[in-house]
Length: 334
Image (cartoon, rainbow, N blue to C red; front, side, top):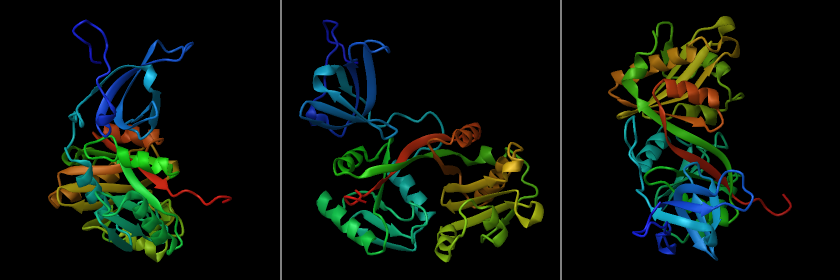
């Protein structure tokens, strides 16, 4: 917090700092049990009608009456990462998008409208990486019409918590009644240590997802459209650990794109969990990625999946940013 020469805390932010990362301290309500003050760090997304709104790294917003502010200052926009490969959000967003392609897409300025018959929100949402070339309300009207023509709800994928993320866009969508339905995180790590975690013997790698692999995949009834999405990417591999009755004991998916390798669909037979099979699959895929010249790894994990988060942390991964899917306002009466 900022302290004046006289030793007093000071509020050194104004409405002109909207869009910047700030740290503020506020008075707690009378009777609060957690102390006299609360500190909040995040992006200042609005300051209107005497209310300050700050969007935190995880995408949640905090509303603070201006009268409750005790101190505040602008802080560095992107704190240095402690470990793992470095990258901005836009770089990673493009890498991830190339590894999970829709079957149909269209540009709206620097936004990409993506559709794949509803198979995963990632392939059926707008990826906004710049200016849509229209005022926001007009752009959202185009988005809703485009998805409506395809019988799909309109989603916008946004991110928070890193260099180049979209806290301001999140706030604008929420003002317009768009609802945040899903929050997950993108984690990054170094590839070489991952390849050394386990003996990858017994893991079968293939260029296509066969019927056995799909039998273990958690999304049942995979359509031709889904197969196209699963197989999309610069260099895609599917890993399987053979199991009983022809269904793999564990599976995984890899996409290699330059220096980056992305891991997905790492799934293990529930009866065989905690035996290191997920690590074995990822080690085998990591070795393949290293052979193709990659050095950095990424994966996505939902915010509430504590088991997966603990596993990936042990593997050397760390959260880079959070991402969210905002759904268009539902029609009245729906």
